[in-house]
Length: 365
Image 1 (tube, helix red, strand yellow):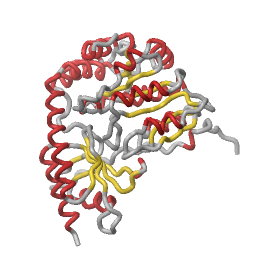
Image 2 (cartoon, one colour):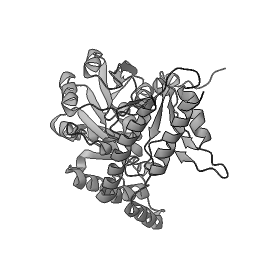
Image 3 (cartoon, one colour):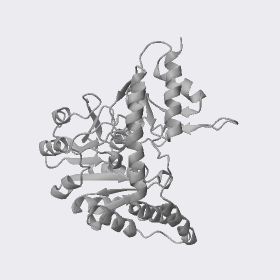
């Protein structure tokens, strides 16, 4: 029987699996710590802007997200004409793949990189090349060793999800310098707001000084607007022009645009979240390690917890144990980490309950 056949590469894609959402049960409080969502929600100013937009739902959005691009430009000192907004940074990543990859091309990502990268690569008919990491961290030399004449794009999450590790800016610059000029370097800075390291820069300087680098960002994390699907990219004018040619004319809704513009201007809300994350990231790392479990050093709003292979102490068994207590973490087997769980840093109550739960789990006979 004849029927439509998908393009090459489509059926090789493993569908993206999001962190599980808890099912509420009577009498049990549930904490969702599986999706790296902020425990504080969005800025009250963003909520007010979103509600105000309800009076204009019959109107098409302004097609270039001008209000938001200008707000981002003010916040970071950028030219708004070199900014593109999208329905989450995921949409922008897929647009970049669509614009710069085709059949026979190659794109490089790292072993435990964000799963959207191979999806976007394969959907464009290109080949996904995986560069091994060192200590769960991107390895510049390993990436450069895998560059061929067919390489057209390199994906780099910095910080990386789900490991929480990062590359210092000097290493990112070394990577850019080692790549051929025709290779586009995509710096995914979704978690950059949480980094408090002097040797880190999320990519603006490199974009401003090269013709072959872009940086993407999101409002889903520290700004708490995950449900609105809103992200952005800063890039060279010629790349922005190419992506704008295939971007949907109304890809960002008016409520999302206005809420994001208000969120980025509420710096007090951002600083509060950043300070909370820093405090509890350090506390969780120390307390979990005291239980005999390894935690990969993180600069993001989550920690990666490694479990032994012993029967009764595996990550799958820990996941089931914690879930029964209403503590929902993220299994990361699909990231090539079958013996680990990723935990979003939550409220003080949630964080303490997870440590208590892990202590009880590890104490089981």
